[in-house]
Image 1 (cartoon, rainbow, N blue to C red):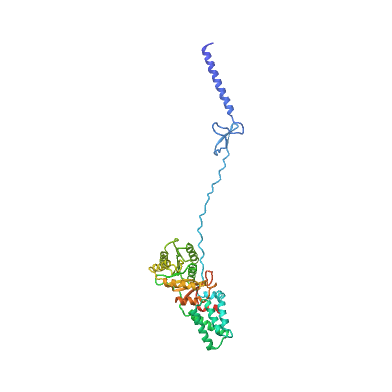
Image 2: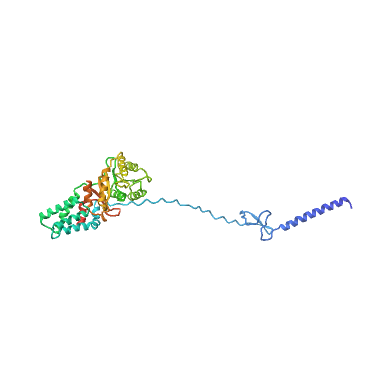
Length: 398
């Protein structure tokens, strides 16, 4: 056989094998009906086709259904934190008539004192023993020995002269004597009016536990009820709770409070409070000072410093000494020391609705030479009242 013919046959066999292998591979890769072709190197799994993408189905072509659109992403809106609502401002009661409204409360605590005196004076026999008992009753009511002696002497003289001991007549005599001792004509007004462009300045002083901060807050309510504008100064920097308490009182009536961190210089706080009052055109600035024992010389000197620093900005119109009416003689000793340091101009007697004895009013005025200007007759926000001697005496004499 010719060599050329053998070469041609070999080439033909190679071509036949190549074509057969091609068709064999093609047949194995053909798609089984109902199944999508899997391409080499790509893992089987769901795939999303474009809307116009074609795929082979049994030798034909078909449009793939459009893929489902992903759900829209909803933007989550986080609401801003709402600012705390400002406390609703209260409308305090005016000072006029406050003590009249609180008269029943005063009568409940003091009626035994007045009733006991009336019973003794109305007895059939006003002998020496009876007059001594009357004097003892007055003394035990904290009215003081000197005042008690004066009242008894006055009553004895008038009963002898008039020669009558009827209940109404005896009550009228006792009423006159008590009013004379208390001082019905004494000026008890609080200087709260601004002078020029400067506000009136009131300093509130006293020992621990007498209710200075509460009295300052209640006094602010009294003044706001009378139409005044008030700035409060939290100069009790030794007690953090005092500043917070004063802040609460001020927020109720719309009175701004000047305060600083605990331990700050009280004189500087008081100075800033007066400056704030001048800046805002306030009528009155009330400065609450820290409680201090009257026996602590250093603390008492500091109180004098507060007053001197304030007076560099404005004069101090009132220095109110807050006394717990239930402390009796101990309260008087405290009062004397405070009066020497800061020139007390008025007394605020607290807790007069409790176990206090009404005679303390007479004695404290006699000892200090300054009038009782305010009395606390309860724990309510409007239970501080300007002192009215006639309402007081009428309340304790049933």
